[in-house]
Amino acid sequence: MSGGQRPTPMGQVVAVCGMPGSGKGEFAAVIAEQGVPVLSMGDMVRAEVRRQELAESPGIFGEIAAQLRAQFGEDVLAVRLADAVDELLAKHPVVLIEGMRGTAERTVFLARWGEAFASLAVDASPDVRFERIQHRGRTEDGDRAAFEVRDAREIGWGLDLIIAESDYKIDNNQDLISFRNDCQKWYLDYTA
Image (cartoon, helix red, strand yellow):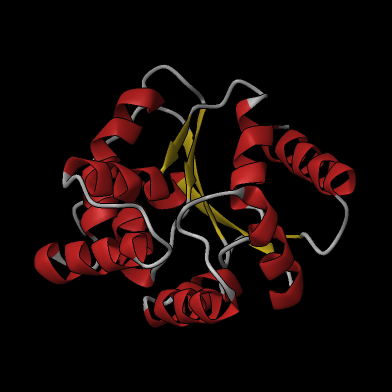
């Protein structure tokens, strides 16, 4: 085994990626309903904001994510998450990572799990995504300018590249019921 790849329990790891507001969380919710454990990279950043007792605002989550990457490396969240994924793989045939955002993270996951790793991109247009984030009520969501800053920051981490190179894609320029049906169909096909 080269590149630091470890022997892992039998199982598959899927990381979902997509631009802010594309539907990653909804995809994760559908997959979780199938009994698949989900670990969220965004939740790790939210936990760090709480740990530092910072006021939640649209910019703070991106600032903390950027600080973590600057201090510990672009792959910090993936490295921190990998052991927890391995623990879940011991008990579950599939584990989902929600919110892969950059090429450095994908590199860690590929090195760790090799052919047992796959990525899925959820795609939606900027206008659809912005409309959605205006209604979801998260403190990290702001106005259109904040939305565009966030898009640019995540593209800077390589998010656009990992979306383009994903193993699977689901279009989410559609209504919620249709999207959820597509997510369920993907999961049934993937695990068949």
